[in-house]
Length: 244
Image (cartoon, rainbow, N blue to C red; front, side, top):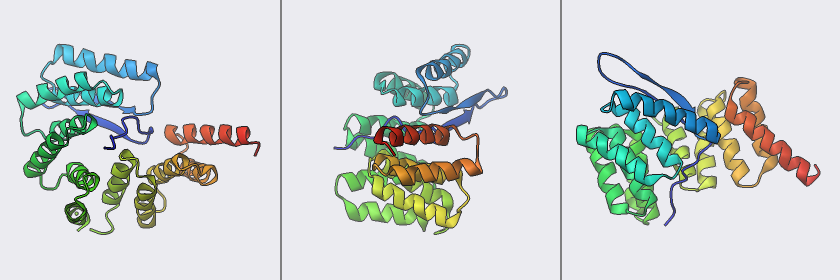
């Protein structure tokens, strides 16, 4: 059984805001962050939760940090706390499915993502993860049906194709992920996120030349994109080591 990758490049970030009369913003945090950055983010979330222990956005955000650190016990505790407050909370259900999948509890993942879809039929992440779960357990027809339903949300919908690529990247299905990012780029060629994501696929497949080209083009559209900067540095080091 393949497990979700828990450390995805800096392109994939989260941000959310707490509900209630006083809005607390949870800052975007790169997934591919240094230990210092992760600890700083965790400290900030701990501080929010210390004073607002029922802040569901902050609890979910902290659970995502723990999930990326593969601290599944703490991630599960935060998600469980959210679900106690709101059992229909779709983000928490999505995360509960992720945590369960990471420990090979696929039935629990299925139940969480199915409930997520029942609560929000248009929820793309849960639908795609459910599709990939079917794919992993070789129920290909059900997987295809769910994917078709996602793109039935406009075949030129950029985010659907991008999300498909992201899910395949999580499942370490790099050629398939690259294909979905290709489609996203055909829809919108000037898109630094999709270029970076495709470049990362090339990098994981060992194609240094194309990876560097995508990172370089992504930076031409967004010179401050940290993930592409780091990708370029990795590719330059790889070429230097290879004597190119």
